[in-house]
Amino acid sequence: MLIFIENNCENDIRMPVLAELVNGSRSTVFRLFRKHLKCTPGDWILRRKLERACQLLKKPIFRSVRSAKKYP
Image (tube, rainbow, N blue to C red):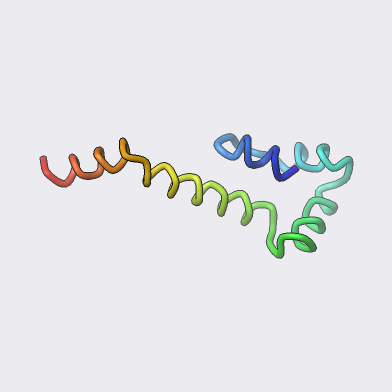
């Protein structure tokens, strides 16, 4: 399930899809996240999206764009 989220975090990931991946219910998904990751599925997905955005901002092409915007 985590690999699926990692590979698809740019997309809108719905709870029924995650439940199907674990052959369980929405409650099962929440319980698994709380038990193993100490957060909700939504919190974890948001954290992954933010981490990915930070990685992209560190790439040289994005640094150049940010610098260019400072000096019109």
